[in-house]
Amino acid sequence: MIIEILTVLFLSLGALFFLIGTIAILRFPDVYCRLHGTTKCDTLGLGLILAGLILYEGATLASVKMVFIIVFVFLTNPVAAHAFARAIYKHGVKLWEKSVVDRYKEQS
Image (tube, rainbow, N blue to C red; front, side, top):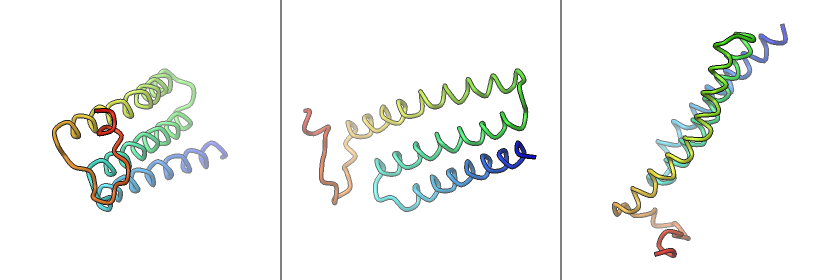
């Protein structure tokens, strides 16, 4: 009974984070903010959904694979987003006009 409740809770929270990430794409002002919002929400949303599926599945080989997927996504998604943002910046896409700090410009 408790496992089912936790499974539903994790799956619901994961779906909520995916929804929040989708809203971030629509509401944030520039590509950098959108990328930041979606990266955070997608990483956490996928982690929560897979954690819920691990609870539902129990201790099986599929659960071990899902743990590896969680670790892989938690390590690669932020790195990929940073590389993508840096490439966008070097390509010349400007920051939002109300941005206060430009760390890449300070480093050049």
